[in-house]
Image (tube, rainbow, N blue to C red; front, side, top):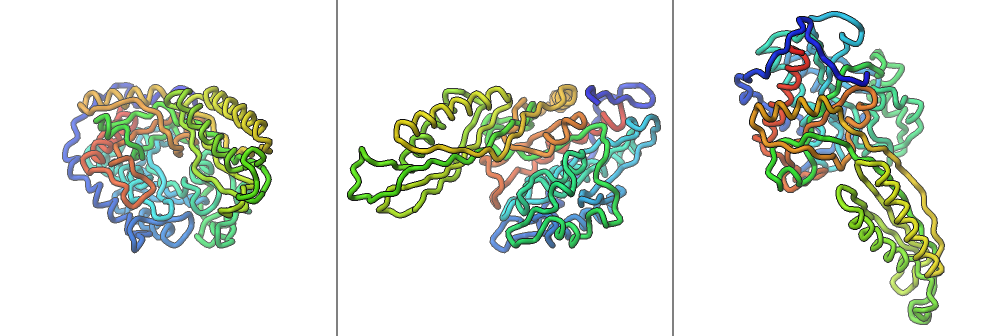
Length: 433
């Protein structure tokens, strides 16, 4: 489905409605409650896919969904759905749900807002709509995705990949966590997988809406309440290996050295220069470097560093990588060093649905909420859903841009503004045209 069009059975347009008593929605209280599952003694939250804290949180959410008047259901991957059934009928596509939500897994010692905010806001938004407007014409659903972070197994977006059919258990069952437990064993021990009683994860949706904290400083620094995501950046990730010759630090003249670490340092400096020359929104990062033999009085024989390049346009990513590789090769040749690289990740940029972003803009203007269109520099489940169904992302500010950290924080006022936009969008698609 390439064009997103939602028509109420009556064919009439329903304007944005006042939202009575939305301020009474216990958004922060429910976020605090969810954060108790996997709470770390030293602060923060650790919920890794299929571990005990994750299982307890998903099942507690299922009970909470039922309490809020939604019909809870798991799939074989462990994704959890809360459904508010629509009254309309028609084609299979018309009866497919409009879905909102995010993920509940975290990084180790993460915060309580990343992912969880979109799930909690979705549950409370559907409860609110049912209480004040009754059953929708089109089925609405909230999903608590089983996994996004890739913190336990080296595979991200398992929840959304399994729903959209991008990946199946056969793609991941052999993976192992740090304790040597396979993915196949972990999913089975958690009560999910193909041998469970739950339905297949693969499903069809009319649209997907993800409400999320920004995880950056842009909204806060520019003074905007809402970020309307225009694109999710593409990424390339590499390991760069520079090979030289180990030798004595005191007896080897500088001009005779084949110093892998010195060469790597010059390459890393080139990464920053080339990225700055390319201009925003391109970013390039070297976050890790190792050297062998790693002894203070020995010239390094080998250095390995990571490289992460991101942009909203694939041609910009490719051009930047080409320029960096040319510079790396020049440096290696001049210093008589070996150069190898390995690409670990290549994700294409994903634009969000234009009609949906336009609808979010209209809601912000009517609600008099300051907003801006912006790319997402981080990856999200929305980039997996967008090729399968029209998708939109809504950001709210993150204090000091801190995320994946116990200090992660978004003010309750900002959380509620994002929830207000979500409610209006779900009302438009579920109750109106």
